[in-house]
Structures are given as C-alpha cells and as structure tokens.
Image (cartoon, rainbow, N blue to C red; front, side):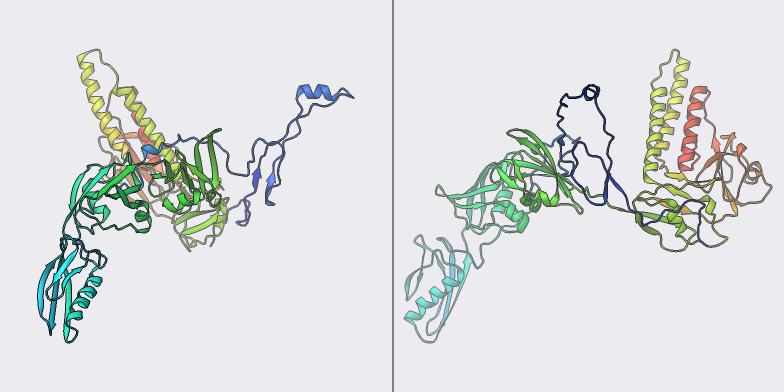
Length: 578
C-alpha cells in the first residue's frame, strides 16, 4: 500500500528555475537561467518630450552599476574584525611543553667545544683508558701521540681523528674506541618581546623553543613569531621563523654557546582571519603583502569553504570584496586586512527523515524544491495498520519559533508582575507570594523543549507543503488506546471504547487532582493538533491532557498563566504543574 494523495503530483526531476533580476544592460547569463525583465517605463519629463517631434531625446546612461554575476558586491553586516583582538597564530605553542625537555647535547651532530670530555680506550699493542678534557685551545692530549685538536668536530670525526693519531704511532694490532662523555652547560640570554626576559641555563644542543619556553614564551600582543634572531658576538648566527615549525615541523637548530642571545623582534604587520576556519587567528606578515594562496596554506579551513570575504583599506578608500575560493588565491592581502572564509555553496539537495509505520529507508535525499506529496507517494506503508490521515511533521525552524514565542511570553510575565509596586503590607505579602510562584514557574517552563511539530493533516487532507532540510515526517500506526495525563490521579493508557466520553476515561483513571482545571481539558491528536475536549469528539490514539489551575486569586495573573500553560501544552504536549 502506498500513500496516494488526491492532489497534483510534482515530479522530483523538476529543477529549480533560476530567476535573475538585473538592472540596466544585461550580460547573457547561463543557458539555464531565465531573465525577468521590467516593462519599459518612461519618466514624465521624457513622456512630454517624446510627444514633441523633431526634438532630440535626452541620452540616458544605461550602463550597469555593478556586475552582479561577479559575486564581489553585496551588503556586509558584520563589523570589521581588528587583527589585534585575535590571538596570534601559534599562541598555544608555549604552554610549558618545552622547558622540561632539556637535552644532554649528546647527538651525532653535536660539535665539540672547550670544556667537553672525551673517553678514549685503546687495547692491543697499546693500552689506554682515560677521560681526556678538551682544553681552551680545543685540544686533547693523547699519551704517546701528543695534542690533538678536536674543536668543532662531531663524534664520528673525533673517533676518526683519535684513531688516526694512535695508529700513526702504533700501526699494528691496536683497537681504538672513543665516546663523548659529557658537555659543558651554557647560559643563554633571552630578550626582546618575551614574557620574562632573562638568562637561562641549558646545553649547547637544546632547541631555541626550550629557551623561549623558559622565558614564558613570546609576548602575544607585541612579539613576533616570524623574526627571532640568535646573536653571538654582536653578529646574527641564525634567524628563525616559527611558522615553519608550526606548519611543517621544521626549525633551525643552531648549537648554542655560553653567552649567546636570543632576540624576539617586534611583531610585524598582521591580518585577521576568521569565518569557517577551525580557529580564528591573527597572522603575521613577513613583508607588507601576502597572497591569497599563502593565507589558505596558513589557515586551517573547515570543509565546504567556497567563498572568501576580503575587507580592508586601500589608498582610494575601504574595500569589501567577495571571491570564490579559486579566485582568492591570486589576490593580494595587505596589513590590517580581514579575511573571512565562508561555506557559502548552497546545496541543491535536502535530507529528510521518516519515522513510524512504513517500509523502506529512514532518510531520503531530495531536491530542494521537493514537496510532501512527492515523498509520501513514494513510500509504501503496511495496509490497515497506518493512520495516514494523522501524518505530522517536525521542523527545526518551527521549533525555534515556538521556543522564541514561549521565551517572549515568560519574559513579559516576569516584567509585568515581578516589578509591580505594593501600597500596603498585606498587598506586599501577596506580591511576594506571587513573585515566588512566577519565579518557580518561569524556571520550570524555561527547561521545556518545544517539539517543533507542524500540523499538516486535517479533515480536508494533507497539506502539500515544500519540505525543508532536516524535516522529520511521522507516519503513525493506527492506535487502539487513549492516553490520560496531566492533573489526573493515576495517569495511564486505556483501551479506546466507542461511546465512552472524556469524563468516563478521567474517572477510570482515578479522577481529577485538587489542582486540576476541570473546564480546561485538551485532546492531543496523533497528527499533532491540540483541541479543546468540549468541542471535539474523542478518537483512538488521542491523548487526554488535564490542565492545572493557576493557584492565585489575581484574576489578571491567573488569565496570563492560563494562556502560557496552553501555549506550553500545544508546543510541548506537557501539562506543566504549577
């Protein structure tokens, strides 16, 4: 069995007709687009002149004011982001992760310097087992061979030099082993735009990050992540750009000497990058310009980014341009600019979900202009088991509207009654009790979540509405029960029996509570509609909802509370207990 609706069918294959309104002279667009032209209109002055033969018509400039196809024009509602208000790219780099990782300087690339110690062992025709210090001239003294200069050599070169020196004296039957036993610690000055300038200890082969981390990291407001110099004897021995480390994991590894100075320069020009990126950051420029391609390589874009908004100031005034992502690569970005990435490619497909009594999958991908009748006609349901006349739909936009409406009602209630003045002590006491009631009510009501249910089924049939992305269509089963809830002594579900009235079901569930408003009984239908019981017949699958009375003698307050209670019952299917 399929759900066939007595209404015109609209094929899923129909495409969206793009209607483009252009002003002035039109440039031919895509073949699939249709232009909507306005009828020729003549100003009164022109009409008067047109009746006068022989007079020259006034020339009208019909040049388009903008190329509307370019995507680089349009209103910009958000204020421009100041780069200084964003954290710098790399701001999470110095959080103590480097300062506890001091190296020992013993690696294959370490270069020996005075004060280091080398273990030398020889056996066979010549025996030696000593720890030889490197003196101020960079030499070690080998007994039987004399001084040997090893300053600036790595461990492999030292081994070869010692081996050659010993075998030159004892050429036969001699084995040689060397080992760099220890290195001298160094003290390095860290200054410039860091949090805690000072003199910090380490080893010659410690990373520059180790010393920067000891100094508290780079000043996030003023320090540069791209211009860091290592100074030795008033000369620059290395320049480090931390962006290389943050993006590619590469960093210069100068071997530090005692008395070296690390200088963090002042931050250079910067731009603000935000929008659909994983983290909004301030990016520092090494010069005054940067290409769009370089920005894309620095920023971590979210999936689906299709356009870029570029805003800034130029010599001829402010600019605001909106580019497709592939056109942005060749753009020039200047200091102070703001770049906002946007996932602005609208999908031509929506996804809706179906629940309840039916055959087939639970999710459907449909064209954006699909209607409810098209989907229902394509769904098979169990015969004699499905209440097709009670189909309902949940929609996020409706839920948001219901939630906003409820919050507005609660806000008006709070504003109206909590700020009222009292003229007597007795009236003040009553106002206090009412205020406590209102505060508890507002607190509980604010926690309720509206369902977002849209009533699409009625006695005239099912409304053929256009579907929206995220819609949930409920196809209920035929029910043989009636649910009794709200201000009832024993809330329960009962079997539907023809001829029984609403009061009969209430009495079978123990009757009303003391707080029940016997004149306010609602019927919640399977299709989501909420009706008053005295105006509607009871049907199988209905829910009988007994509303509470407003516990106040203030008639105006009681009326307001009753209205909000009805609003809550309709949007949440809950009879909120006051």
